[in-house]
Length: 217
Image (cartoon, rainbow, N blue to C red; front, side, top):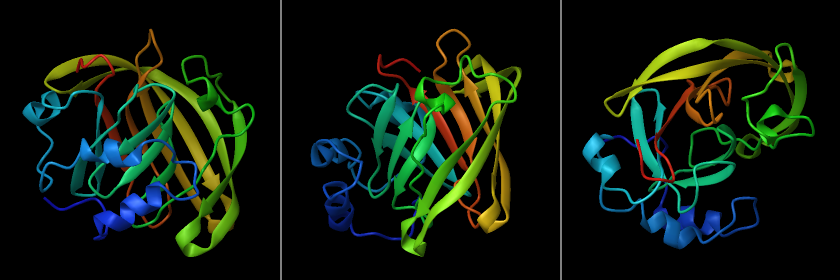
């Protein structure tokens, strides 16, 4: 299938993983988990064949499955064949291999430091966002949070009742506004699905945590 990103040589992606950035860890071994030939559509059978957490990432009409060696909670490094995401409690904080990569670290008081389960309605924070390839750094991203209803979400052939949390973001330097949505387990706060806008010129990223650390869908 089409990959999420523009064509990138795998060796370059590996070099980027081991370079000087916050995506640390045994990247080469981790990426081997995702390299089993050309990417195919994300199916239940393919997900079940993965020994560990699996994340579906869709950008426009392209879709890929990313994997991690560790837990699916907290700070997680996800790897595909040539793409890479760093998430913290479900929010994308860094990417590599997308058409418009982002570095968006959390700040003090950020609800994603502990997760969205107890986020207060009306909470507002400001982050600093970088787009390295475009030489844009220190851009302000204001975020405002609202709790939504419990909603039924279906994936992996099962239906889940999940708590929706809305994140309204605006970046005045880019004249950019969007609303991100997160659906989390109401008892644990684990984000199982999200829709996240990372840049003005990209459609949203649709992320679904298909399989958790315990290997369950």
